[in-house]
Length: 189
Image 1: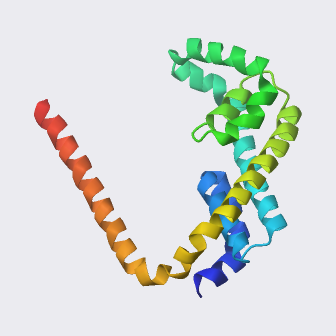
Image 2: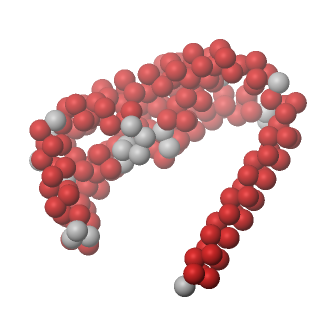
């Protein structure tokens, strides 16, 4: 089975799972797969939307059900959370439509919104609209970016061995760097 067959067979499922856990990169790659004719555009949009909404709803309900426990466990966060909550409650719609576009906020914002008085149904409806807009935007960017990267992908097999070797070296260097930092800290004590 080659990569094209794999994407055609499992790409939509991978897109759902990928958007639950990662998001941006997976959707951009899906846009590229649409450009290459490996994924149907409407199905890819719905898959990205579904995975994003699942992730957002999980974080929202985690905040709703367990947010108080988290704040009790970390009492120093209470004052900062109260300040953020006041701003969030005053700008709910704008925040729901914008948080997807800021990497790193896609989990904390729904969690925080879950701890506010925001109605769950309102969050769901706005989240579906927001996730659809976000998914469509990133799929389009991936699709358009595919024009410039497609010639490189066609020649990927020529360079794949070198790229994998470079990645392996990079990982080894990272492990070495972390180990030497840990040893330096240990020696400093």
